[in-house]
Image (cartoon, rainbow, N blue to C red):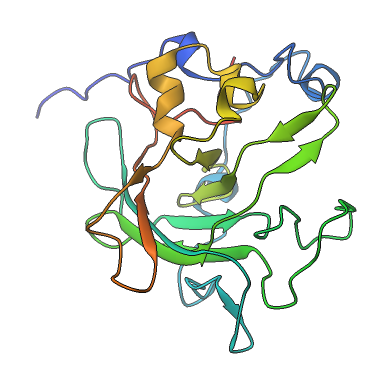
Length: 235
């Protein structure tokens, strides 16, 4: 039997810190002290995230059979572990603003129209090769009150679930060429430029479907030196 490969800790600069000075709200909500609590069987094995319990919803571009407003896109990619092995059966949840930059949520009071045919949330599972895929509407940018004249770049939120409640990672996917990226404190909270750019999807003609939707590829690495930056990992 070979010895297990030790966990390769990422460089701190490749993950956003819990307290990012330019991202104002982190100063008030980041943990002041971290306590390591051993996980019990409950946290590591429950609940069971399986399609029979959490039915996939892979097409966000319509609701009740009616098409949402905006540019239809396809997002696809693969989920890997730190050694490049595909992760199968992972539940990938996504949520986002609509094409006008407004979330379908009562707390979002941005002066932009709601789309009754777009709820902005979905769920898929990776296949045996770690692939996932969903259809949605390209979201719009929106203002936020972090600093004067602050606007969030176009983005989609991702939440990845493993075998239990303690195995959840959260990140955001951005779009190439967005002029707001250099100005965004959340995107730039990851100090390492190479790691930061892992958050930007790539246009992919192979994913694009003719006369229907542009395609974007967003691969996710769960941990290790080449891990995707996650909101709940930084130190």
